[in-house]
Length: 366
Image (cartoon, rainbow, N blue to C red; front, side):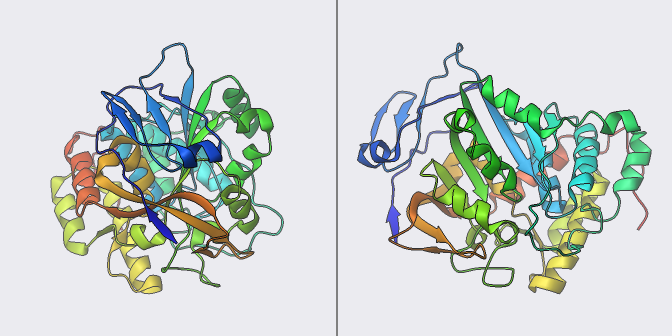
């Protein structure tokens, strides 16, 4: 059952850190809407956002399995005001070790400042399959060429910190915003640490589907990889905003859109990513476009006014299948994004650098 909620349309323009109130579920459900200047309180289980307090330490974590649409989400960070402090890798679109390599090369390629942390390996009962939807390396099979051109060395890859480092960072701050655009194993593990759990203020998750699915048992790919983690997180009673396949499936770039980006002349490797993404979606999902699922949670943090959310009660079964149910946990469900907005920001990212990238003066050969 969906419950319509009224959300403030004010753009979040303050710099980090934000202070997020950690209210329990009952308190969230009894809140009333009130607005006073920049201090905004949302109804339902929506978070409270107040003016930033400089004495509070807040960090934002982006958890990603580094496929081609994840790479586009990282590209958008080059033009967005809200940035992650930490990027955590996960298995899924590729292996964990390859995801670590992809994180290192994209951080250098895009000149990102986030700390890189290696996620946890797949659980023993995770489905075993060779996933080439995004290429054998998750990046359209051109990661090695990018590594060679960037002159990355073993020392560069050794800079990816172990997962315990993330736990230590979270224990040293007051509040955490956690974004997952990959599998949920890392977040599920963190929730089991009570010291860390109490600091996790809000979650933004790309995953699941209500009426649309792309894997067996009517599941979505990210949720299908670790159903136990999905159930633990959805039952946590914490402040979750979910971006399901029903919305992300429709964030598409057509072949014509990609050709227009190619004419701009910047990020030639990303043109390769998008073309490979389009080919895979056409072949496997019968969608003749590059589908940019993972861009939505990243965009939401900077431009919440472009999205429509509803309160919904969601449950998950042992396969990771999600559906609405009166027995489910109350969370925020993204139901719509302003048409054309994803395409607009992707184009903005391509335009901001044009063809001046000294790392990649030439295109990678097909």
